[in-house]
Image 1 (cartoon, one colour):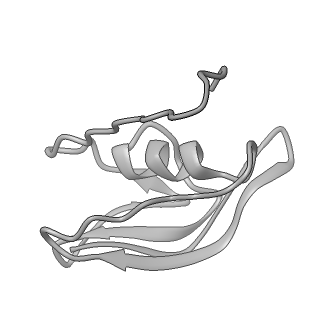
Image 2 (tube, rainbow, N blue to C red; image 1 turned 180 degrees about the horizontal axis):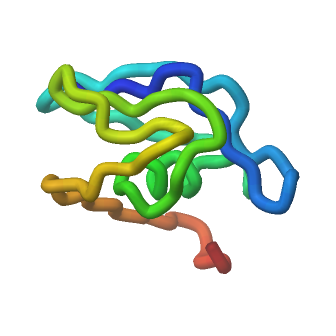
Length: 91
């Protein structure tokens, strides 16, 4: 299980994610939907260990893997697939 607990992140003091909490069980499929700039990619980067959260924690299989003070290099692969039906746009 992957858990986000009260996750917040900002770029140059501009909040991109604010107090997000949710969990994803093994085998579960989750879709992040929202307008440009709402934090979808930031959440994926946080899950992959590419960003350090400003606040909150990320737990993987009951183990703390990231919080505001540390990031543990992930031992898992994060796969992201993008499907566009109307048109391609810059991400």
